[in-house]
Length: 79
Image (cartoon, rainbow, N blue to C red; front, top):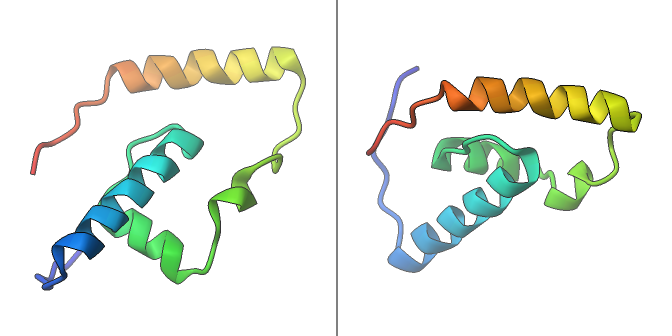
């Protein structure tokens, strides 16, 4: 992936970082500023994620166990 440097105001940077944090809480995985911008540019809303996946309690427990196992091996790179 090719990267570019852009200039944005401090307030816009703060807003996109806050949005990335909210998105991360909702999808349960690390969210970069780039991913948050992609999400916004695709005109999706955080509320689009709510109730979009129907599963049994057992399926949810199995999924969470798998996610926790995967998350435990992640190492987030610092900027």
